[in-house]
Length: 196
Image 1: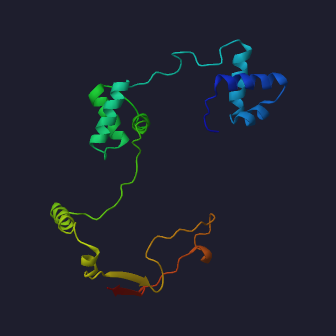
Image 2: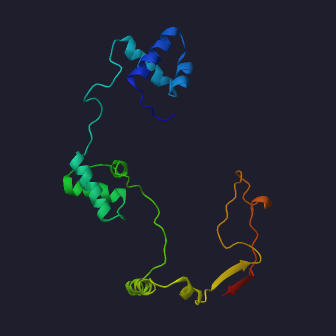
Image 3: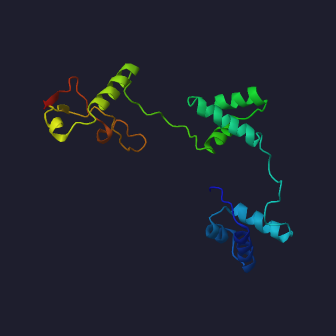
C-alpha cells in the first residue's frame, strides 16, 4: 500500500474509530492505510505519545540545501549526466557519499526527470542559416505569391504489413499461438505515391 501522510485530525479520528470498537481492517480501509499503521498510531495514542512527528525526528538529509541546488545546477549544465554521475559529483565536490536513488530524488525535486530524448533530424549550422534566410526572404509574401508555388508530397502504402512496431497482449506461454503472431514475408511489396 502506498505511503500516506495523515494529518493530526485524521489520526485523532482514527483513534476515535478504534475506541468505538472498529477493527484494524475496517479503519485501514476507511483511511486508505495499512493495518500496521493503524495499530502503530493507536498504540502511540494509548501511551500518551504525541500523534504528530516531533521536530527533528527522522533521519537527517545527507546533503544540505545548497549542495542539492549545486547538484541540480550540474545536471542542468549537462543534461546527459545520469543520477549515478551526479552521485559521484557529490562525492568528489562535497565529500558526501550518496546513493544513485538519493541523487535521483534530489534531481526530481527540481522537476529534472529522466526521459528518453526526442529524436529529430540533424540540421547543420549551414542549413539553419539557410532556413532562417529563406524565412526572412519570404516574410512579406502574399497568398497570391504562395499560390504560384508547386507543393509536392509523397506517401508509401504497404501492400502486406506495417513497417512500425506492433504490440499484442498475450498470456504467458502463448508466444507462438497464431492469434499472437505477426505474419511476415520475404519481399513485402509497397507502392510509393507522389503528387504535386
